[in-house]
Image (cartoon, rainbow, N blue to C red; front, side, top):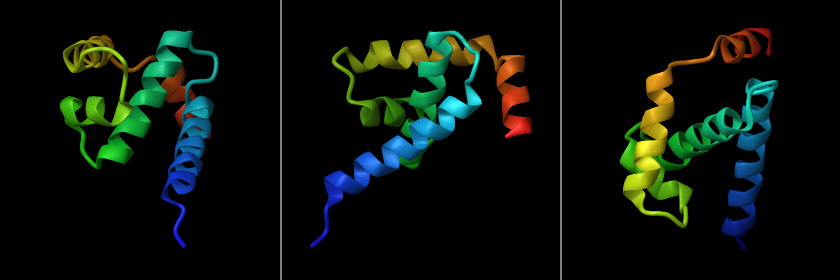
Length: 88
């Protein structure tokens, strides 16, 4: 018997753990963005923001989620995130 819900939560927990290692010492909003993008791209198997927004299942309009993700992407990658990636 397959436990798809359990497998999904295990996968999500592993992704969140990985993204927390990357976003260590970043502000809370940046940590959430890294976690959302990492999980969204892997779950959607796509890098399109609309597909990522679908997989996040947020309680706000899809358009608002896409705008939030776009705004963070426009800011670029923080140097601290790159340093954490290279050291992990």
